[in-house]
Image 1 (tube, rainbow, N blue to C red):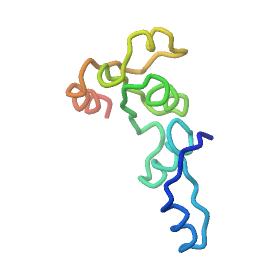
Image 2 (spheres, rainbow, N blue to C red):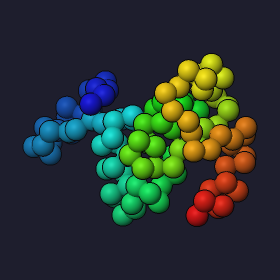
Image 3 (cartoon, rainbow, N blue to C red):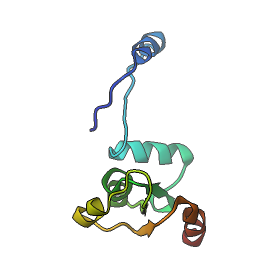
Length: 105
C-alpha cells in the first residue's frame, strides 16, 4: 500500500471517532475500489483520466478500469515510451475527453 502523509487533524478525528483512519491514495488498488464501491459502480464501468501514465492510467487498467492518458500537465512523451503497458486511449487535450467518454459509454 502507498503510505501518504497524514495531517495532524486526522489524529484528532480518530480520537473523536474512537476509530483508526485508513489513508489510501492512488495508485493503491483500494483507492479505486473503495471509490467505485461507494458509487455502486463496477470496475468495468469506470474511466480513469490522467496525465501520469503509471498512477493514473496503467494501474487502474490492471484492475479493469478504462484508462485515458491526456497529453497535458505532467505528461512526458518519454514516460509513455518507457511504460510497461499501453493506455486504452490517449488524448491530446482534456477538452477531447467528454466526447471520448460518451463514445465509451
